[in-house]
Amino acid sequence: MFRFCGSPGWRMLVLLDQNVPIGVCRILASHEVRTAYQMGWADLSNGELMDAAEAAGVAVLVTCDQNIVFQQSLAHRRIAVVVLATNRWTVIRAQPLKVESAVTAATAGSFSVVRYSGRITRSVPG
Image (cartoon, rainbow, N blue to C red; front, side):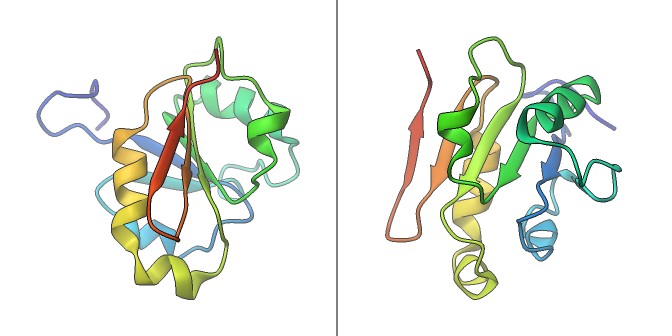
């Protein structure tokens, strides 16, 4: 069941882009996770994917496409985007809390970039 952020027992609907290792599903087990492929959105462009995800109630899009930050504006969007700085599963698996923390902290209309050299950087386009 999906509830509003902050209510007891809430779970976010999270979408994994095509370029995200499937193992990230296990890292985000506390959320409802779907892949773009499962949703039938594997061939959509970034903008179309974000439109479809928002219409389906997705709260967070997780992607490894570092260019999305420059290609898409989240100014009037209800979706948050978490960008993983690598798609190498061995690197992501070694630091799972970085992904979980970024997704849990994501807010509508924000980009977060998970860097594996030490920190999560957040910026909100203005």
